[in-house]
Length: 305
Ligand SMILES: [Zn+2]
Image (tube, rainbow, N blue to C red; front, top):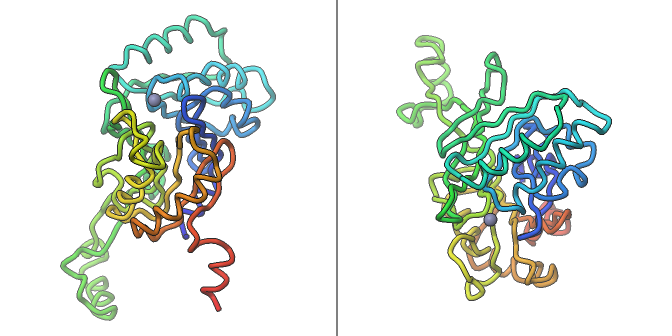
């Protein structure tokens, strides 16, 4: 399961569509969305968040900001730790929320920065001297036509062998590296690590291509339950993840018209139908469950024999 499992291990999350959604990645100090009750549920982990990416203004994604600011100001912890909030540029409702919070909040003991961002906006999370730059990038989500909605992703700049040298043997490559220098053999590329859809119809393949972990809106267990275009179905997410060679998937925002038993039964069927071969988890309220039968502890033990 590799990096997908490691990222999931770093994640604190909550998902109940229409009520509240938030996902903290402790390793990136990154909080994705901040639905109601976020600070209460994250408890001491709330101080971990240095960056917040708000996907859109809907209350279940933004309604916990005020509570989080107050908890960081008044509860025991790193009260002076700066906080930067990214939110969709050109969203009148988000602007109103920000204005209300700025007017209504007391003087905070930490620097609070708001940045209105558009798809493609990039923020470097690692200090510039770090060898591997880690960048948070805003992306275009397809949720709600009237106001801009975003997703976010973490990308790393990496080096790889130039395709022209791909057919060479190890010895040839070592020889070239000695004579021409390593830099002549390699090229930089951007690797998608973690992609978050926010609320969205399926993201475009190229946005998620090769991501180690995808957190994607999976509102509908069945396409026939669809009432609106601005969300994805589980099957669409698994098909996207197959095409885009995603390492692992966390299904989020599943509608609570279903119960967890129905989710546990249906998702493995859809994994088989789409042929998706990576691990699949579901975030259901505050619990996260692995639903892909091939990655269950019993199955992994069997494969090792
Ligand atoms: Zn929404």
